[in-house]
Image 1 (tube, rainbow, N blue to C red):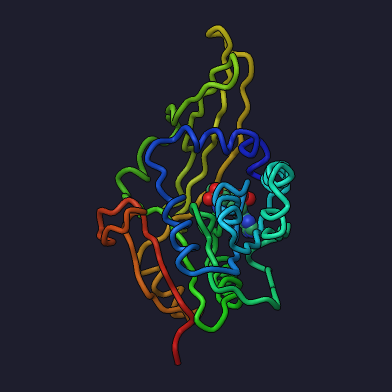
Image 2 (image 1 turned 90 degrees about the vertical axis):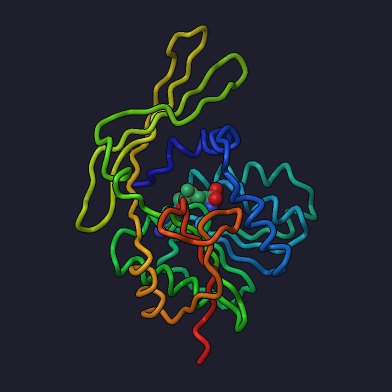
Length: 258
Ligand SMILES: C[S@@+](CC[C@H](N)C(=O)[O-])C[C@H]1O[C@@H](n2cnc3c(N)ncnc32)[C@H](O)[C@@H]1O
C-alpha cells in the first residue's frame, strides 16, 4: 500500500506552511560543497531535488510512491530544459535499488529511512546507499532523535499540525498516533487533511503512516554491519552537536576506510 497516496497532493503546501523546517538549506549546502552526481533515495515530490537541479547539479531521484513521483514529474515539466537535463527519476524501492553509476553524494532526507521497519530492511537500505557511493562519496541522512516520553505519549489523540490557505479554502493537517510498538520501535498513525470553506468542512481525507525510530547505538551497529563509518554527526540542521536532547540525528558517512 502506498501510504503517500493522499499525502502527495498536500505535501508541498504542508511543508511550505511548516515553520522551522531547516533541512532544505542544509542539504542544498552539502550538494553545493560536494557537487554531483547526487542520488536522493526517497526523493518524494522533489522538495529538495528540484532546488539542487536548479543550481546546476546533476541529481537522480528514486521513490517507491507513484503518487509522490507524479507530483514531482508535473513540477519538472514546468522547469527549463537545463534543469530537466540535470534530473533522472526512478520508480523503485531503496532496499533493492542497484546502480552501475556511482555518486559523489547519496542523501536520504526527511526521515525516509524511518520507513524501514525491520533490521533486514534497514540493512538493505543502507547497503543500497553504500553501494551507490563513489570511492570518496558521502552518504547523508536524517532521522528524528526519539524523546521517548513524547513518542510514547498521546496515543489516540489528534492534534493540529499546521494549516494553510489555498484559494478560498483553509486546509488543516492533523496528526493522530494510533499505536506504539515498543519492542520493534515503531508507531502507526494517520495524517488527516480537512478542507474548510466559509468555516464549513467540505473535504476530509487521511493517509495511514507507519514510522520506525532509531537509537544512536542501533544506528552505530547498523553502520558497522554495512561497512559505513561516521564522518560527522549533527543534532539539528543548524549543525549543532548531536546530544541526547537534540531534535534530529543527522549523519554524514562514508564507506569504511580499510
Ligand atoms: C517524508 S518523505 C521525504 C521526501 C523527500 N526526500 C523530502 O525531503 O521532501 C519520504 C519518502 O520516502 C519514500 N519511501 C518510503 N519508503 C521507500 C522505499 N522503500 N523505497 C523508496 N522510497 C521510499 C516515500 O514514498 C516518500 O516519498
